[in-house]
Length: 452
Image 1: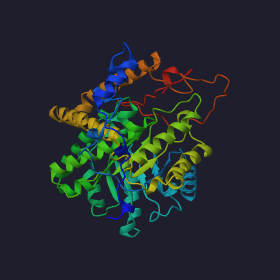
Image 2: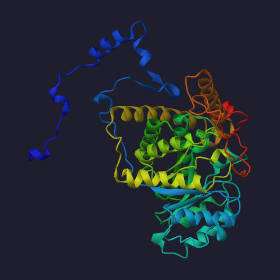
Image 3: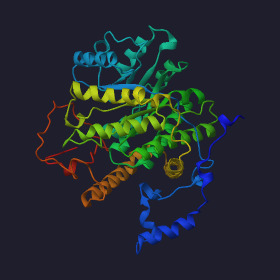
Image 4: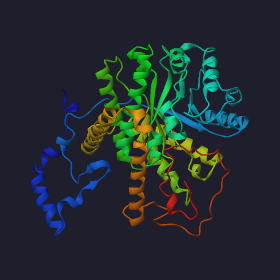
């Protein structure tokens, strides 16, 4: 190896100092406060330590995501013709795919959209069988190699968000219709419903695992092979403004699913990840700060290795976003991907002592919770019994208590509010889901006249 390629260790020129010596010096600074006061406790006993070493990262790297991601714009306008205008505008200006929510007239919504160039995904929801059938027919008209997208079938997630019993009807033939096309995913494991209802990252991860395993069992019992069942799934997680937790959560999700795949003897152990920025973190008061929150969330999703990222417009909590909100949501991803060159990186957080340790803690805690859920009857039982709803509600109440006592702040609402700023208004959106796990915006109890 030539001198030009010799590894450089910046620590070689300094004397080695152990944690014990550091702890002595730190205690002198703290005085009467214990060293533990420097530790921050997160979800379910997961802790952030004040200092990390190479031992915290050694041997803990797992599966990594690929470089770059799909910039997927959300299209949720009520009128089909308006939705079509928005879809075309998004694709003309940098979006690389579309996420359609609540639309049934896809012939109008996707008019002049070239499916061979723009992947289309359906957001899980009620009464979407006609949309699934239309999209399957439309894909038949294009080259098989160009068929890319997701049908959004998610019986458990829809039941969690909207209520009622899971609808399993027609699942198997739809999966069979997409089998063999690597760019198509029939089922979506949408874990965002739990996070948006208040759950922390451990429950979000555990619920996604339990739901994914439930779908695997259902498909294999119906005649699909293990590899066909795994290939049918895509997972959707939230990204919020806690950047390191988001990064670690996505990395932990891939590690956990690889473990499920290995146990199932699946040929492909990768996890296809879609990430949507959190609706719960958005505020109605001083909504401009949402631009910063969304930027951090999208950055974290890219560093965490997401395959697809959807950024909610900053004014989403107010109602139907306007053109400026949609443009900012799209462009901040373009800046991150192209100007910041994040699309050229593969697992840039890998090897970080802190991130590797946090990834490991999340993975272990989520795996333990997953095993508990499986032992109690699995995902469908956890949903039907109200277990997940109760845990999410408890976590949401704990967050509200932290915000109320000031230990957690919401910029523009509980910290540095601007009472002189004129409020923004947006047209009302469709009726919100009213299932057992409703959206609980963090700021809602603290905004004047605010609701979720």
